[in-house]
Amino acid sequence: MAHYRAADSKREQFRRYLEKTGVVDSLTSVLVALYEQQDRPSNALEFVKERLGAADLTSANTEALQQEVTDLRQKCARLAEENKDLKTRLQHYEPENGATAD
Image (cartoon, rainbow, N blue to C red; front, top):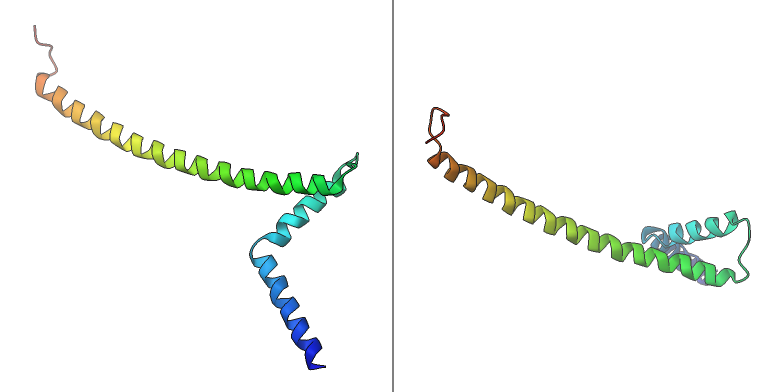
């Protein structure tokens, strides 16, 4: 009897692990998508593989986009600093009263 409890405990730990890491949600999403297909694919396993592979691509795309956002934020900060510097320099050459120098 103790053997069954140990096996059940291991299964429960594994089930929690799959839930925690998002595997259950990913598999559920793929299976729901397969269920909702009006024209069922002839190779269901290939459908599942493609859908799970698409999740990997999405993750890679997300990482690339996050890096691009970081790069663009840094560039924006540099340009804002350059703009501030140029405005400061321009004020040096502009008359204080707003009149143009002839």
